[in-house]
Image 1 (cartoon, rainbow, N blue to C red):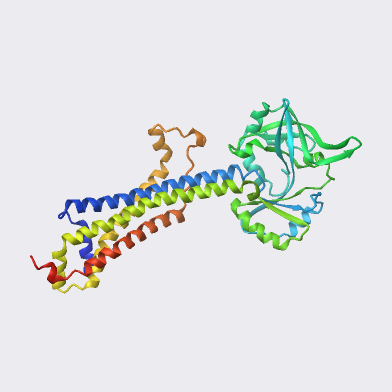
Image 2 (image 1 turned 90 degrees about the vertical axis):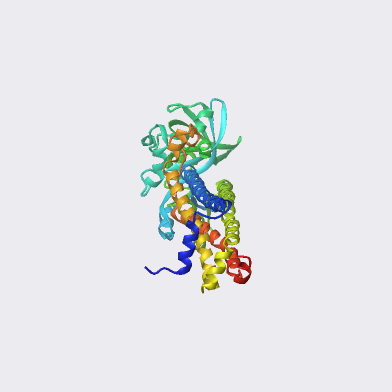
Length: 413
């Protein structure tokens, strides 16, 4: 079978057992470094993706991802017409009415700030809004949220701070909806009964307060049929950011847009920065291993100077010599990258089982253990970068090998 000379000789040299033991050790060490670096990057990157996805679900799943509200902060009467004329943006799952306000909740002599959210379970598409609440409901029932019941759902952290349980009564004071009286401004307030406790296991638990939209509108003294704005839900909460720019271009100055970034942008920026820094540090492992190939190839060239000279006298061109040593060095990168890919994927699939065997407690990540989310594009990029770094590391040694002069190399042979 036909095989290019450079490929044949390069593969033979990479499999050779004879020669300097130290050279072979450096060569195997570089291969192992690439394997470990690729596997570590895949595992750590997948775990970081999992944590980011958990944050999206546990925080951005219950807080407004993107809202449209009047600039004057008054009630929105024609919200159906407004929702109908707004364009459908990429990733949009639902557009729902909402009644919201900052407020304070009082219980057991203690006050805690909350974000009051009025939901409409019967609105078209509301299942997108109710599903995460149903999945993370610890005690109580969502069906208790009916108009006129004045029942609320609160976050687990908030329930622990106020020491309340379903059936207990709390006073909710809203920032909006106050009325001026001869005695001054009287805030909108009313007693509500706790109907359930939701555990999102995130920062949102400390400020989460959900009630039926009709009850929230009455608390804020809105007219019948009024809401405070429209609330968007997306396939990926990060899609709210480009959608905000797109909608801003078609909305009049009477409306304002606010995304989750105003409240939680710094948190997700910190997570993104941490991902980049961890990837950079682990990427240095691959870089060091790749450039160890320079050392191994340079020592191999020194050991094989006579062989290189003989090949040249037999008619092997410098171009073929160059390609031959590139093939030998690149074989380490390809084998190490494929090995790291297999080890990384296997570790990701059985990561929590491995940690259990090692006796490492992962309870802080929840009942399901460490979240792992493997992304094909990210894994492909890691493998390609490892191979490219290896290719770059072979360029100089291959060039030096092609410049060996046969007369000088064979002078003392």
